[in-house]
Length: 195
Ligand SMILES: O=C(O)CCC(=O)C(=O)O
Ligand SMILES: [Fe+2]
Image (cartoon, rainbow, N blue to C red; front, top):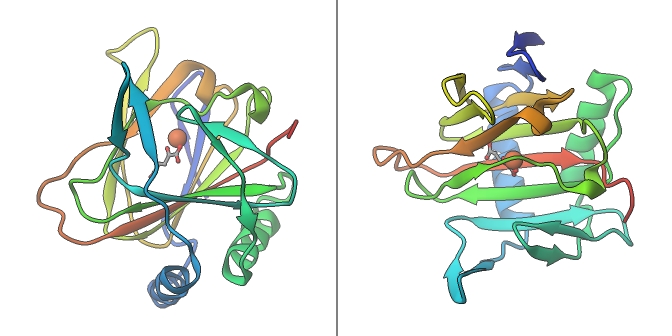
């Protein structure tokens, strides 16, 4: 695991968490297993579809508000449980009770600037993010000093861990990349502290 020291938060990055063959297998399994939803978000009274497909899986009984949406998780699928255990074994400490999945169908799908700082994640959450498929940029920007920026390219089979005070001090986004024609699946494993 490579440590990326941004200050005011920590990133760990392993581009080779999964081999290319494993990544391809997981993509196929997830496209078969996952029930993808087209969620909508209401902005100033107007309803917009989210610019990506999403899914939410986890332990029974937890709920989580994400981008203003109340989510009830589907039960863990076999593939998701395997991935969760692989991450937990590697990190030796943090555990996860849920995973949010995003399917970016091509480079027009995106996620805007935000931080994963919902109170239910507790203080200084550890969020483990697996990327599969097309490489996409992942941008970070400091909340107070907007000149502090960092861009990563998250490649297929990679694992990114966000931890420490990162969510408190930084926002992140997945920007549009018009030239990207292939899809990408991202999974963020989280631990909801008070369901
Ligand atoms: O797709 C990604 O790499 C980021 C996803 C993300 O930030 C989130 O799900 O909160
Ligand atoms: Fe996020």
